Image (cartoon, rainbow, N blue to C red; front, side, top):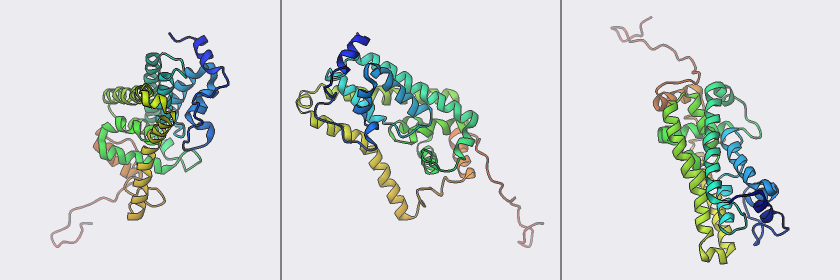
Length: 279
């Protein structure tokens, strides 16, 4: 059973959760999964759940998602984090599901204003381009696929809200995505953490965690560089999805109608008998 005393016993000692040393991850040290978990102390369970909710629901894409889930599951398997794995999975599913629900509501209410903001430290228009590219490629399934893609998982439910995706369809995709990502990645870490070879070779587990964290990012970086080299993108922006009318077209194709304001297009008239345009 999960108790505050059990968590305290696991986290109150001076021994690091991962005895082999800190996990080499992208980003600053304080955003490394094991550093975050240790910093939460006896509130580790609630801290992990809060991060998942914030990343998916409050438009803050720079928090560790996949690697945090994987690390938490692995630490539970090794008894370094004395939590009930099923309680952890249930709460992570709830956080992942609720996060996307909140992001969808944000998209329905103030989404167009959010998506029209200029670039800042934590917000880049190129991430919105990337999100619409995923919707163009995968349709509504993007809500599921995006769970495993950094940045896109933060903005995909907002885009679904902006385009007024059918709420019934959105909830269905959200349930599947929250299960596969929030529960699936955590159980993957838990399963691998129980493998005898990995338990005896903690460094191998660290490498696996890094791969889980870095591979999706690496794939996206490779795609971005390839697109830049071929002229498909300019300064990270995708010309195919960087204008309101282009995003609205994706919304019409995927959601059946568009919510994003479009630019006015000149009227097209049929030519006259002599081939000249009609007045």
